[in-house]
Image (tube, rainbow, N blue to C red; front, side, top):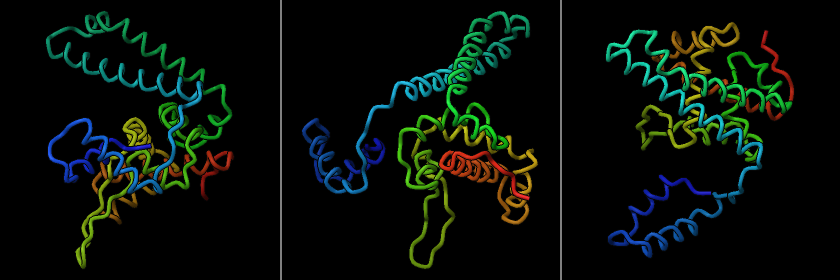
Length: 234
């Protein structure tokens, strides 16, 4: 299983001059030979997980376009009534997809465990379950690496730079994680941790929300692995 952006960067560093299909084939084969011990075979998702992932991504895409169209129509001077009438069918489509996703999640017991975690809603469960049920993640850090919220080191000798998210992973999970972090800022269980990030760690609000979202994702991984209900710490 290869990450396209990394293969592309590797090919750019190749001594091959110019881009052609034979050159690309040689460079990809070279990449496989160099990193074969760090790769795992790709297997197609089972029918249930594949359908859930496609439904979630379709709903996410339509919801984004719906929000953009709503803003555009408002900016062009349409009244709220006109906007609602124009977008009624698309609103209904998004609602229908949401119902389908919820119906699918109700079919699996995993949903019950994950839904017991505060700030974990349908979006995060639907985004994570297909990956959790099909990929043998080594630990929670492998899972957040898959989502692209792992931290990249920036060090050289005595220089210790700030770490940043890699953003090299599934953007759909990453977005759902951020929204869960945003919800968690007002949640009784997670708010003390969020406040600590702001006051003691001196993080900006967006950074603190991202870090909180990562902690929630780690909790999702732990609850999924143990198949137990979430118990809030005292």
